[in-house]
Length: 335
Image 1: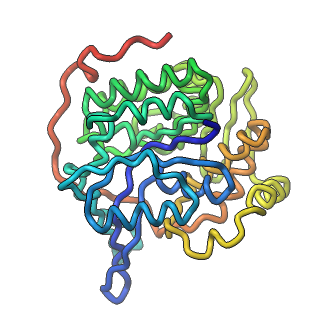
Image 2: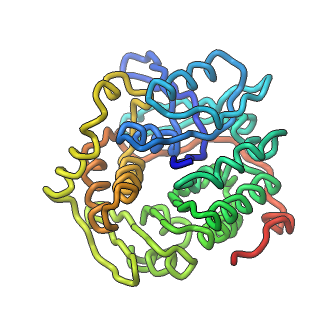
């Protein structure tokens, strides 16, 4: 099936306004990327696990209103989506309080019938996961996801990885995060990274160092977002620095001209710049644009993104530590 399969989590988000009242929205990095892909006219299915509660039904309705396929969403009785409360400190810093441990998305590759998702992945044109996606699953789930990515790639799917690192999602275990991400990168065709995250996890001293490391890990195509410095893009052994320009604006207009009324009532109210970039880059590549022009398209979308004030500061409880073997011996080596 010629579509994108985006795998991640949707959370219920409550934003506290200046008047103390909370506004309800939905969030999640892959969720927001998938929504934007849909708005760009890219056939996209969002894969996750939700509960049997009213909010889960509302999430599905919102995704369908955005034109996304929901046939890969599993419903798990007795569960509810992750809940996130977002405040803004007097300094403007964004404070995020999350309750995630019992979220059904964690069980996506562990529930009975997960094979239907695996089959859909092997038929996809492109499969997109992120570092946040990987932090959700236990050893069994990770093993199944990684094995399926390998099969999908062998059958012709492009594997795209958005390398976001949120320390709280890994319970503070950076070593486990690095081990898991290494297994994904050697099965990845397109790696989309944010230098700030990579520096935090790996200690990279420059965007160029990040690009070199990701290329050495196995990704044939790499784009490293470096804030005001633009994006470093590597493809075919060539490296270029890209900044947004007028060409990107024309490409975005071309990609979005068929959106019509879809943007009037968006399901994702806060689409972060990094997720806008990923969606724009992938949509451009899927329509035949070369990597350098795809990066310009992504940058143009990112520049127009709605950004909350200040960086995220997650506040969450401790989680159980991992086993020494991150995968319990269940993951075959990369080919």
